Amino acid sequence: MGFTTPEGSFEPTVMFFGLTNSPATFQVMMNELLRDLINTGKIAVFIDDVIVGMESEEGHDELVAEIIKRLEENNLYVKPEKCKWKVKEVGFLGVVIEPEGIKMEEEKVKGVLD
Image 1: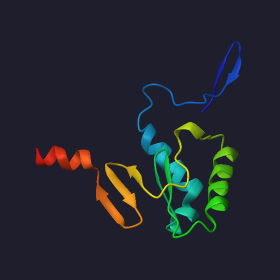
Image 2: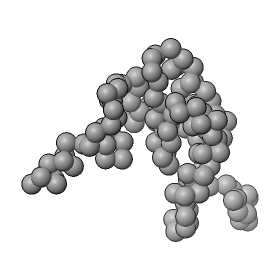
Image 3: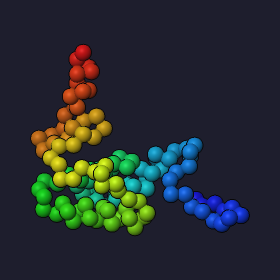
Image 4: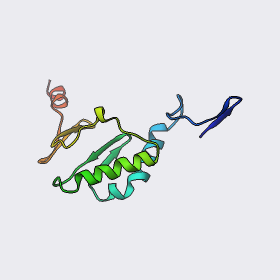
């Protein structure tokens, strides 16, 4: 989705303002890039959030390296400072995912009870 001006041809590195369906379009792209990994049940993807869930640490680093490789091959990059690496518990879409299962975030529960 490039464009040409008298100054040359350009391709945006971010989505244009007003581009409709951009989150859905990005989700489809991420699903295509990582489909086989998603199908293993070891990762989940929601727009630009990728969660790696492993039963053990064995194979974790290799899986993360594969995800990062695929993203970079498609000119997508992670910001390490925004990532959480090798954690046992993570908040995601209003829930907390941990080895024991999934539970609501405490703030959400308090909001309902109060």
